[in-house]
Length: 165
Image (tube, rainbow, N blue to C red):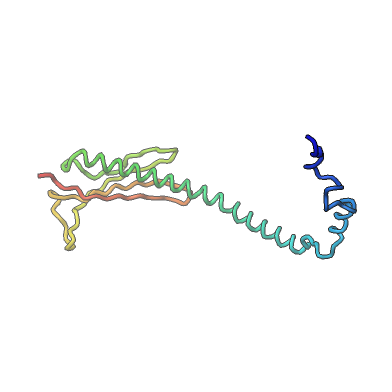
């Protein structure tokens, strides 16, 4: 350890080139006293607050509309499930046992909503504009009706059933 100083790696006023000549508080006073340092004006703050309030009003108005739309979509999905399940049951019953329903129609309750199910049978249409014989093919329609806030709603699904030979 001869020839090596204990403070060789440490910065001291003797081995430092940048020694502060003034206290740090003076630098802060100079920075704050400059004319080019500015904050936001009152007009800028008011415009920003106005934009923020308009955007928040628009977003809060969208929340009830979104909830209503989701509720309507859920009711329509439930109606389609009721109709498609009934259509699948009719396909399993067989061609000769598919008959239209008469009032009072079947009632189903799903998630607190009453759905009325109506089945109608008609001759199946041909692409030429005519109809097929009902002994060969039938156009089966399943209609589901329900009531919501906007009045009566309906969902209709149709399929052509063919007689197996």
